Length: 574
Image (cartoon, rainbow, N blue to C red; front, side, top):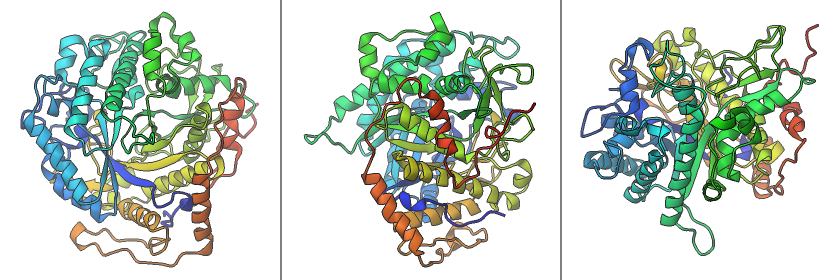
């Protein structure tokens, strides 16, 4: 049974912290063939036999295209003030270029933004959440061509000009995933890989690096357009922001006395592959060494465009892994979430030698609940980039074990998800309070159950239950828990609940207002401490060479409101 009280360190967030939920266009919109929308690579991929669970497609999804007003009303009723969403490139530009613009698609998003504005909900808008227009895939093989750079920049500039009401933008969501799974493993669109039993075309050795290179250049080109269109004001400030969202696991050495280099190299393969270039203008040395001639080089001009090309870093975190040097007991990993060319360098593990798992397993086979991994990841990123980056948690959430989602009645009583959210929010609070990390927002994945890519409709990550037969929405217990957290934060804990009562599932129209409760002195003190922490940022600190070992262990050795890191604290099995 989950404890519904608010997480430890909740006071550090403060009233300006962004509490939101997240979705993506192809996963919720539906209306795939309506009002002039062009097909995307996910339309093609999902309609290819054997590519998705049960042959599921996003043709209807949650039908957000027709139901967005009710969904925005539901967001508002749950106290949400921020909402991360993405644009469908092919709904706006059916053939992928600005030469053909779809008036119906433009009107749709303007109406969505107007509905959000009327309810006081600020959008955080992603330009690319994996749905490349199919026309560009057929024209020049999508991200494998340098032509994609200018087409994406033109699309981005079109969006900036068409939707000036949007202040916060993200260029790309999880390039590691859509490139790794799309060009290394071939299990996501466009389905390219070297394994001919799975993919008709592709080269898992070279194509991921080429596609990644073009995506990074497209990001830089889009940001240049953004900053030309919205230059800083005279006081060097602007309310307009643009960033990029990256993803990956937190990687730890299996045991404290293990060589930390394999874990560090894999962290760089997941995180620094796409984050080093947009901050320092080049790939990390470990990527260069592993990829060799397959890794394109940036010109000096491209490096200059890439460096410092984000106002914030979006961080998507779901789980963690142990890493060991391969030996007889720890076989080398063939792949790790799409990271190419890992060869025989790493053994990637979910349990230690005694069989102790990293944490409870969620409803997806890759998802283990490891909240301390989020804390350690934030500290790792903060130190790697000198304490100078602002971060938003742009996705974090879980699917529940299948037995807990077996019926609608079970699915809405999602105490497993509440525990996941609470412990991960606590981990963020710990990173802020104990390590001075600058995190300004948290967007839970997802607002509602939706189309989960190759998993189709078999996995549920939403705070709101969706009956995919009738498309009825029912808020889950987690939605009401999250509402209590948001309302408490926004009121600085002056008149909101600190412990949410166990709530029955209530339909939107009949849901009573949460009960009010007093605020303990300790929690009020935490609020003051949090405000001071956010005002007194520590000086920038660039981790010097040789501090790799410390970075991977220091944070994980600190006390935690979540359970302590498992496995790597013990001694090796003899």
